[in-house]
Length: 388
Image 1 (spheres, rainbow, N blue to C red):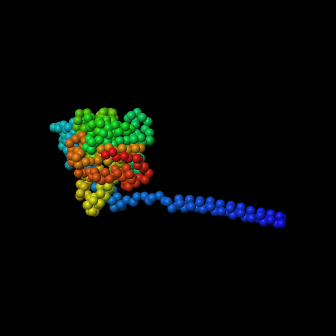
Image 2 (cartoon, rainbow, N blue to C red):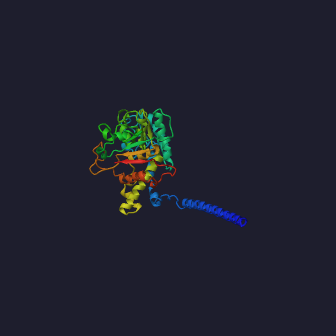
Image 3 (cartoon, rainbow, N blue to C red):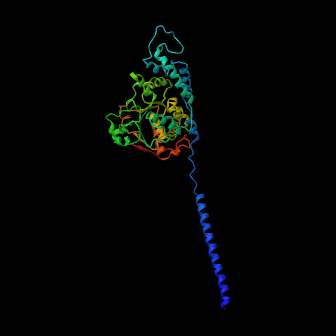
């Protein structure tokens, strides 16, 4: 009996071991399959789909034809256009009437001074170069480090690093800053960008005192060019100035002032200007359609058509987004009881801007940058905070 039991017991032991091993293998394979299926059924959220009609309307530059004609006239030395007459009339240092000068279809008679001719070639070279680059490039944002940061680093005697600035504060000019105490917080940033020569004296507790970049539009520089020595340095002569062009004729102001500036005077790339224009226009048309219920075609007549433009603050924010790892925005809100600018008595807003559309852009920049149109997928928007 003992001899017959042992073989049976061995067989049962082998069967038990085999069944246990098989169940373990099935269980492990089952887990593996479950894990794979879990990864498969949780795909990434689909990319945001923009309204193609709005993108199309926002991409059209209503002022392009007029601007092209104006540039061609200026390159031919024709300063008699309706938009440029008032501009060159303020260049008093050039307006010296000469009885010996003969009338010409090119240079105005009052521009017969040697001083004008000394600047003419530089003006023409700067304007033609800007006109050649004018267009739209979707990958311009990563280029801002090279176009803006590198020259600023060189001025500061630093090696031009491809790394962006660690933190930047863009200080707007809204009157709501008078109710704040952001001075120290603003100055704690690595780079502080201020707009259109806004005053800081006697406002240090509200807006801070540190300035690393003065961001202006060319209308501001035009006013500065009329002063002795082209004084345009409210933050000191060593603070660099970055400027976007409002009118091509302002390149004469740039030419005049560039020779007297100790610090860099940089003009934004026209592709960058075009990107800012299209983004703001998209938000403006979108808001117009949603609020009024009207069609996109009716937007132009309600927003001054070719004169519509983004604000200096919006482009300064975009500049910071391109050259900074972290961006803080101050003084961009508004209140019924607050002045339009904290340092002036201006109350009303400019009609050629759509501030409400720009506010919508800022909030997308902060919370959902994937909804900002025209930005390249390769560009990563840095963390942004808006301080009201």
